[in-house]
Length: 247
Ligand code: IPE
Ligand code: IPE
Ligand code: MG
Image (cartoon, rainbow, N blue to C red; front, side, top):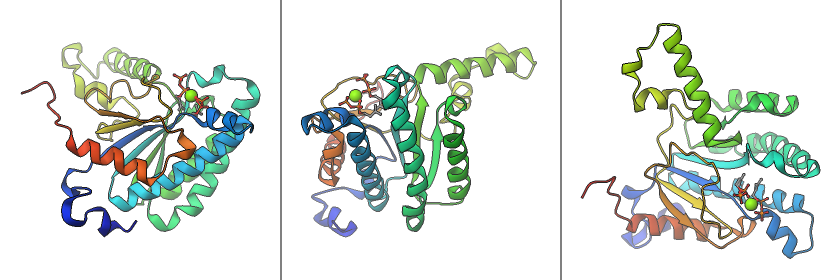
């Protein structure tokens, strides 16, 4: 669909009420593969292609930030074979994403504890972040070895260090100080969070940042997710009334 059609007659999307930031939990790759008698790794591969398409689509619509959950701090519990294949796929995804997204001015940023990742993947992350850092289009954040609790623990550690070093007074610790120590220190909180595959939980994703995000879930398995589903989510989002605790 062309950009102008999305906003046509104001009956599809209101360009003035787009979410600035969409967080995505792309779940259901394994179930998608199982239904077809395919290895789980094939589901992940198809899921990575879906992600690329959805990112391009968001860039076209005018969304400024996407944060996708690619690998959680709990996903290490999976069989080694699956973890290894996910790490390889992520490395390949980053190499190809840079090539394929070159034209679209997308900036790639990884959030999570990358110190625990295979060295070649960590290097790829540095390269891609460096190569895309001056791009001014959509910022695509990939949460990799990311956990909301892990992020908060590391923020607490940094704050305590500042207090210990005499750079910060305990009475000056506030929400802004906490935010400044998170991976997302320079990213606005998500307006909308999308989770696929019928699950209705946040699974340790962006625990601090999701405080007032609108939640939208779908039974569709992530590899089957298309632009049509994204538009459904956006359309529903535009009908919501966000009150932030007020009246
Ligand atoms: C989500 O798909 C992707 C990752 C966790 C990497 P799953 O692998 O969780 O798929 P299901 O939930 O088993 O179907
Ligand atoms: C969340 O999905 C993590 C990612 C999509 C990377 P999971 O499939 O790991 O979540 P649970 O285990 O069902 O809560
Ligand atoms: Mg899952």
